[in-house]
Amino acid sequence: MPLHAYLILAALVFAIGLFGVLTRKNAVGILLGIELMLNAVNVNLVAFSRFRDDLAGLIFTLFTIAITVAEVAVGLAIVIVIFRVRRTIEADHLDLLRG
Image (tube, rainbow, N blue to C red):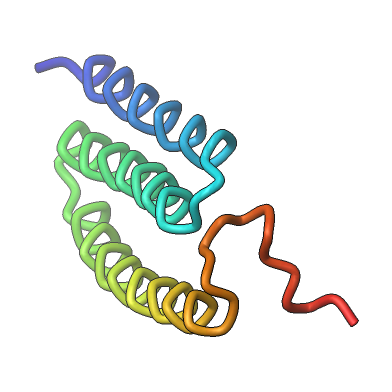
């Protein structure tokens, strides 16, 4: 498969993730959109790594996936704590940092 096919796939996945982040009101939906955008970046890294026959992109992708897993765990923990305090996870109602 040529490189441009992978790049088009990554662009579509990134656009779907960006659409999800901008249109969702649910905090979990926003986190899922961010995950889609990060996965699109990973597809780009792997595609360029394969195109150049270099392992650096694959190694960097593995580190990115590990960091993404940690980010999801922290994000969901924050969402759970906010739900316990406010009884909602809609982003429009979250104003915990206001004085």
